[in-house]
Length: 296
Image (cartoon, rainbow, N blue to C red; front, side, top):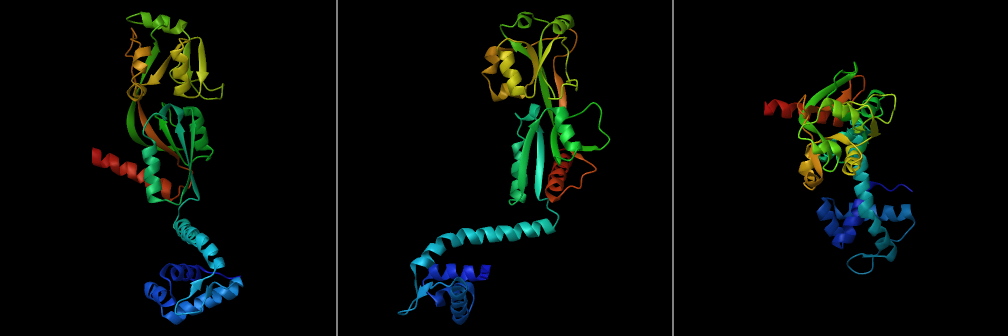
């Protein structure tokens, strides 16, 4: 059996227009070419697709059954050709992006939508992980791109472009002991349990860790739930309060006595300079770079 896309398109058009001549006009072909194509398709399939009694061909039940599948098959064939062309032009077969769990509350999906609009056939895989684990995925090339907080020390292989500024604030449930003070001393912080967002690897020391006693979790949403229970204090994105105003009723932003209780970080798009990036990854990097140029 050797059925090609042109045959399927002619078959579909004949059924939709109701005649060989109307299909020929729509497709810009001569009627004899349409008739010949249908005849060859019937030979290839060993099926009678049209009865030719009367002025116009009438589709057989078998033809109507195949017609139901033809539209989707033609779409998939076009997608296959587009994907093959994109791959030949440098598009990666799939794009793995890791979003640091501390940034899941941000509008990171806008960047995914941007890629999908430009490369609709691309397979995109999204992962979330704490900061340290996200960097590891990037360095071992399990992911091509990462949305991360800025790092105090850069890994030699990483390259990045800044996206935006994020603010983190120390918080505690309003019934938690620390929340009863107008100002909290460093000694009180040290002695109070901290709920810290950290890598799943216990050997990696978490960032923004102050307390001697701490519990670890791998994302800010679970940290927030624990803090709301009054089981400790922690550092959460200020944007979480904008997303969920109800949090203001239950959480208090702590006022530290010895330093400003706001931690400002840049959110970066990061990649491994040793990785061979495809067209979609390069497109997003260049888009963000152009955005920065136009907003300066």
